[in-house]
Image (cartoon, rainbow, N blue to C red; front, side, top):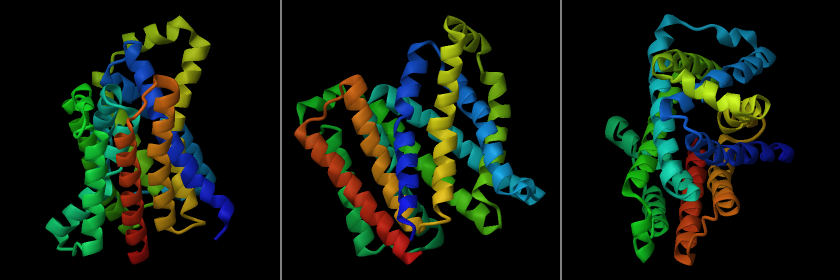
Length: 296
């Protein structure tokens, strides 16, 4: 293993963890949910195109039979981002990131229901430990629960659910011979086209007009850092390190980065019990990822 490449999934996780900063800023400046998604995905097309051109232009080639799975992935990405953006706007960034990281639990449940894959005692223990950690983070054992909207919590859980379905759909597409970049570029194109009728271009014009140079740079950073580049880095890491290791590093880095950003920028200071819940959940999800990576 080339240890230098261990930094790739860590950087990807930190970039994913920074998305709350962009989402809250755009929302506070009058950008609605669907317009925000249009900005994120339409701009992300360019860096993903560059990644494909630098990797292999044959990745653009697909069969018509691939389109249904690409559409399923696109729908899941929209649902994931809508739910995740809502959770980041209403609950602490660290809690939103942790709820999203519960996706592997949903994957295990779906695999059991639809494919009869066995849930071992170790997997079950990790799942229960992660759920317990999330309960601590919500402040359910403290008076602070009243300050955390339930809608934000359910939105975070919904993000994890959509992420799990996306993982299963993309895995199926990969088994059919498609590359991650291929799935991503066509999903993003479908999403961008679908969002055009629901996009408020007046909001975009008003936001950019305030300070064109700064706002355009902000929009490019938003799309690149919170979506395109993390996917590219995490995919690139799989060429050099084990997928289980990559998953562990990414799943640990994202919530930690969200916790740090929430503390430094929005003064979101968790109580000691909430912080313990954060640590418990991250450890449980890393153990689950490690178990999954070993099996793979």
